[in-house]
Image (cartoon, rainbow, N blue to C red; front, top):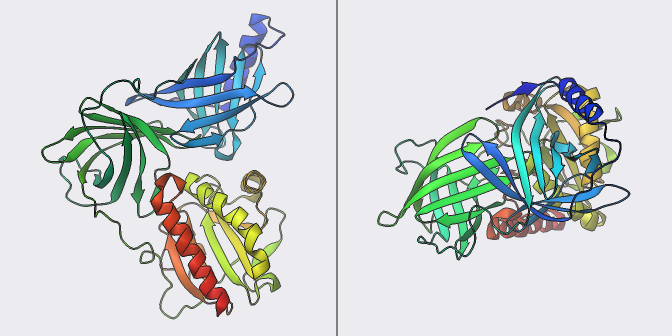
Length: 416
C-alpha cells in the first residue's frame, strides 16, 4: 500500500523512538550477505544485500542482483537502527537491528515534502532468490523472447520489448530490452512451470511473475514496479526477436545539422558546443538524468572511456534533465552524480525530465523519447548519429555490441 509522509515527520518519529528507548550506544550489524525482501503489491520482492564493516563506525553495502554488486552509499548505525542510503536516487533503507534480522522500510523522496515507503526485511544468509537452487526446474527458458507489455490477452500481438534469459538449473538471470533502455540486472528462479524475476537498485523495484506454456512456448503474467505500478505482460520464444533500430527514433529536424545548446553547470558557468573546448573535436552529447539508472549505466561506461580517450581529440557533454529546473535543488544532485562516477566532462542542467519539456529545450531534435539518448558530433560540429536508449551491462552481448559500435563510430569520426 502506498504511504505518503513527510521527511520531517519520519525524522521526528525516529528521534522520539530512540529517546523513549533510552539507548545511547549503537547496536552492531553482523557482517555478511542478507536475503532482503520488499513487501510490494505483487508479493515479496527479493534481492541480496552484502553488508561489511567500512570506514570509521560505518558499513559498506552492496545490493546484489544477478552478477551485479551495486555499491550503496556508506551505511550508518544509530541506536538500534541501520540507515543504508542511495543519495543519487534520493532513497534509503532504514531498519531496526534484531540479531541477524533487519526490519524497517525502504523510502524514496518524490517531492520536496513527500516520500513513498514500502516495508522491508532482511535476514543473514543469502542462499536463495525466490526458492533454494536445489529445487528442480520444469521449464527451460534460456534464449530470446518477443515480449508485449500491457497485453491483457496473454497473446503476443505486438513486440515492445525483448526478454533475454540465461538459465542454470532453476536460476535465471537476464533482462528485458526496450526501445528506450533495458530493465537492468534481473535475477530469479523457475518454480514449477512459472518464472519469477526481481531487481532492486535503490531506484528500480521490479517484480515479474509469469506462467510458462511449453506447447505454445509462451509466458504470461504480471509486472509490478515501484510502489504501485502494475501491468500484464506476455512473451513468445523467438530467437530472432529484435527491436526497432535505435538510430531511427530520435533525429534532427529537416534543415538542422547541429545541436544548439547553452546551459549552466551547477557552478553557474554556461556551456555551449561553440565553446573552444569542443572546437575541432569529436563530441559525444549525453542526454541523461541523475534519477535515471539506465543513464547511470551509460555514465559508468562513458566516464572512464573519456579518461582513456580524451587525448585523442574527443569531448563529452552531459545534458541533465532533472525533476526540478531549480539549480538550487538539482545542482547538488548533478554534483553528487559527478562525484560518484568521477566525471571529468561538464554536465549542465538543461531542464526538467518531462519528455515534452526536454524536447522544447532541444528544438533541433524531433523529440526526446528516452533517457539516455546519445548524440555523436563530428569535428565540424555536425550531428552524425543519434542513439536512443542504452543497453547496459545487464544485457550481456547487447552491451558488448553497443560498446563495439560506439568505438567504431568514434574511430571513424576521428579519422575524418
